[in-house]
Image (cartoon, rainbow, N blue to C red; front, side, top):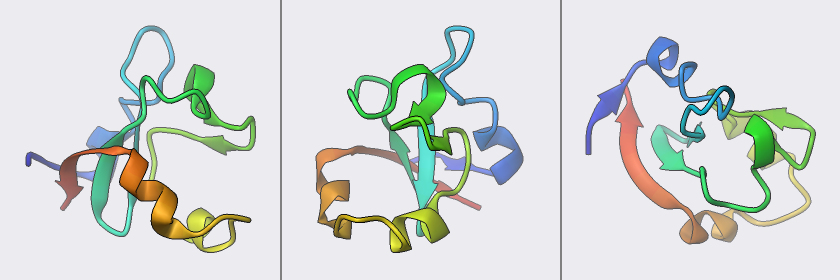
Length: 76
């Protein structure tokens, strides 16, 4: 898996045709085709292209939802 810095992750915000990536606990996920990550936002609340580790710890769902996402890299 390729490594990305947080600065590099910001480019993958799902806007202007960019892929949509998020990082959680050091793993980068490609959520470009996921219905809950449209237009670079997760359910209209969380912006993509960033680390959402804190946000997922406060989410109304368990972290087992991450198993549905495609792992593509790591944060360095």
